Length: 456
Image (tube, rainbow, N blue to C red; front, side, top):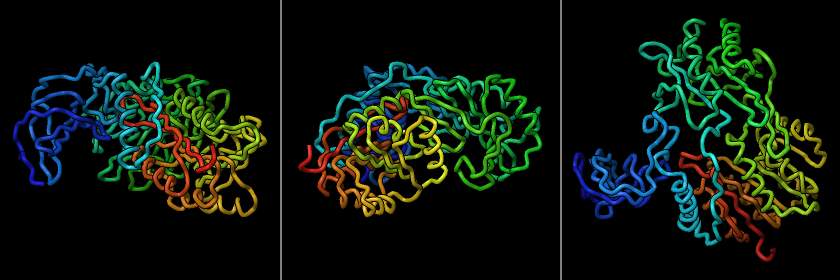
């Protein structure tokens, strides 16, 4: 396609949709322009910034007809920080777009015609994040801390974030002011010099327990006592202060070594009366209110009567497994990360579950061995990373055919792809329910029930 517009042109477009990262989509003679800050149902005059063969980028010059769902973004950093993409869209509009997006992706990518139920949203879609990962750097006039601009590693210096819990704001706003007094030099990504890379804050919403993780370039940390004293003054009720060592040239936040500087090694949180111990490196959903909604939906789709054996692939620290264990005869969890399996075992013991079994290893290798040993599953639950299920695991599901598959996904595109493979392998998609785990962003979780063809 030859672009019907060129750089620096001004054109008027109608915004049809949003991309997965929140850019408005307007077309000129079928040629898509991706427009920052534009919303569906808007008409805008835009300035073309860049054109490629099949699409281009533009910015709004004049908003001629605003969307009825457009609102004033309450955050002063919106549009600069890349953490949120949809604060200018009313929450009702966000839910409507996410539900339709899931429905459209299922049809377009997966050719899936199963009913998509109404999305489950939040009553108060703010201050929900129980984990904040705050990069530190040296600015022109001193240390800065905040979040990255979209698609960059440039830090927006911030005092407050409206989607994270308040304790993290206290640390972000105040700790950077104390760094020079303590003598801790922020890390420089370009030169690989400096000490403090990130501060990670984890909060148990139900318990109020707080963990602060100082991610340092080196293990030797001469200022650790001063850092502990400062954090305890900022947050007197802090439960755990730990150092995590990451000496690699990488954008991965946490390294492999964690050292307790003060207090406990873990904090505890409770979801639906199930207790979880959370360490610095544990995977734990960042929105505890919606996690309960998500996991109860998965439990509903599992349809347990107390007689079933359930396999939980990608089980992590056992969060979904323990929800299932409340109503299953037995739950068997598998996870490739050994530390997570140890956490899962500890969490099962903490809650008094005796009907769980956890094993470390690749799911596509462990599950076939379980079947060969006679351990057959009536229900299989998967909650994979954004890339979706490993093809070998999908092949395993198709080969051994548990009666029901409950698929929990954070990426509608890879979900639709995997559902298509499972449908072609003898499954039927019964029902799909989106859950808004991440208000103000374009991300959405989805829970799907599949049944083996011939089994209701």
